[in-house]
Length: 257
Picture 1 (tube, rainbow, N blue to C red):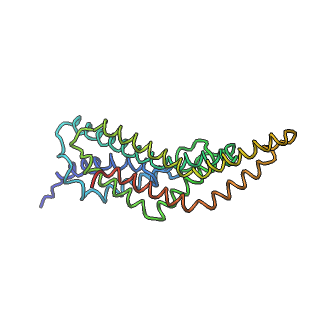
Picture 2 (spheres, rainbow, N blue to C red):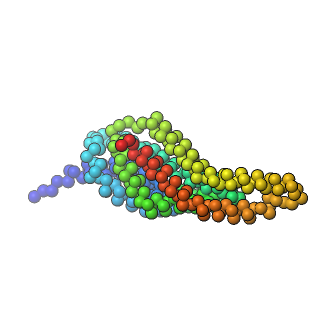
Picture 3 (cartoon, rainbow, N blue to C red):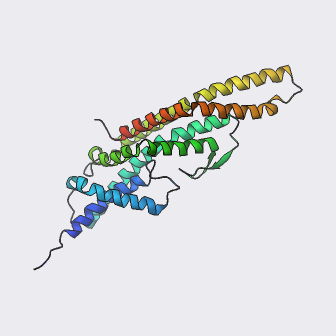
């Protein structure tokens, strides 16, 4: 009895096609593509998710081409789609960095900089880094990472491998997500903007009344203390607002319906 293994090349081709998109998105999407996760962990997640999606997605993939260059072009197509969708998803969480930077400057903590452990690894305001880590924890605590995984699967219905890459639509979607994230970041920091205006206005009046006294130097501890107290009072409302923004942004990537 002979055993035929002619199906192995097609199986490997379909698996690599799925892994090209899924692996690229896993390296970028919020929650799974964080900088503190090692490359091996992210690679293992991508391989396991590809295995899970294989029976669901493989029937809709194009047949294995005879020409090697055609197969290579299809793989590049999937990698580019993964880069576009993963990059747009990464823009969603930039609202917390925006809010954290504004809060830090209004609270007198703009000078407190540290490397961001969750996203880019570059120097950023310490409050922004704290909010970024908090947002990631809340995404997993509220099971919104399931929505991210659903968006990866739904991407095959919105952006099928046979269709050409819609760069114009991706450009418009990226600008829409970036603008919405910036707006949400400013909205999250709005109470601190009002606090900063009132506080520094009062300090300005005091400095005119008592010019011989270094008002701004003396009031800096009060500014930091009041800013941290206001952050403690508003952190729950800010978290709920951010989670709604995160869910709406991921659903936007999943297309209509």
